[in-house]
Image 1 (tube, rainbow, N blue to C red):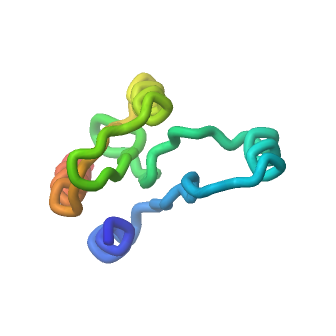
Image 2 (image 1 turned 45 degrees about the vertical axis):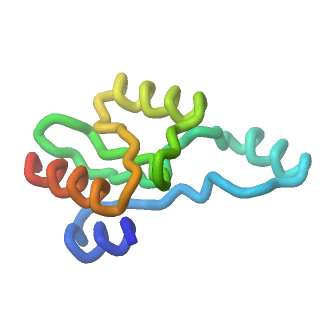
Length: 105
């Protein structure tokens, strides 16, 4: 729903969902890391600069779930690189974050 919202409300913004989750065999884990994959990358990346940030990164969680240590580290590193990087626990929260980000475009 978040990606559909981005595509319909902000079609000029290049945004992707990082398919970073899932079970992998030992070889698939090796190949993932060998090719530069990293755990903890946020679920949604929006490559669109606004007045304050280089891009928007959103980690999506359900209910009261919180980001893992790797996810927290990734969000922190993105913030240090001048990205708006945060986590949300609902679609409504994600919409608010996205709309606020684009209001400053």
